[in-house]
Length: 184
Ligand SMILES: C[S@@+](CC[C@H](N)C(=O)[O-])C[C@H]1O[C@@H](n2cnc3c(N)ncnc32)[C@H](O)[C@@H]1O
Image 1 (tube, helix red, strand yellow):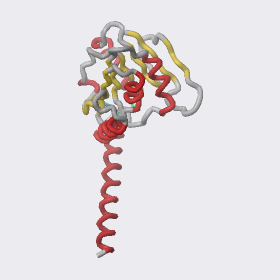
Image 2 (cartoon, rainbow, N blue to C red):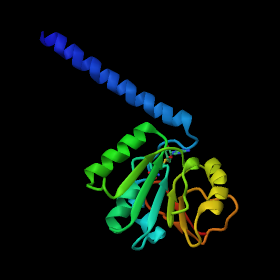
Image 3 (tube, rainbow, N blue to C red):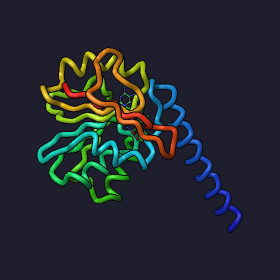
Image 4 (spheres, protein in one colour):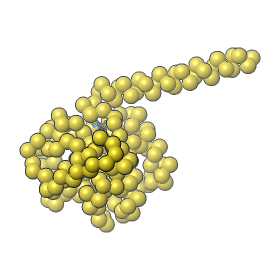
């Protein structure tokens, strides 16, 4: 009896591991910017570059597990924070992290494609996406972002627009060492 219970539990754990692997692989194959979270140590620099104020509406495009959104909601209590994410596993992790941080009512995680998301109410945008996506997004930002909206992009710049500032971060992880700051 004990052996059967142990076998069933092992089988369930194995199935769970396979499911997680499958979903991660799906995210790698189906998006041009796989799920690689920005190091936690970069979050405060990103938030200060964003310059959120009362009433800001921040979008994290491809929000992963939502760490920038959670950091932003902690710093700016009145900001509206929205994450857009295509990978089901990242959506699950982001919603779970927001709940754990007690931020579920202040952060919305939209399960969807960045390119279908209307950005006209964004005052601030953060993204950590690969160069191919940045070049497709530049015209969307130019068309949809309101005058004065600020974009912070980690590591990868827009192909043609000149950044207002490039913040160089030297310590720690090799990821997210440059923040490209744009005002539209
Ligand atoms: C490099 S990760 C960055 C995650 C998060 N922004 C962070 O900084 O921790 C890129 C994320 O973008 C998501 N992504 C890629 N293409 C997308 C698309 N077209 N629509 C929505 N999300 C997308 C991926 O699933 C992945 O979670």
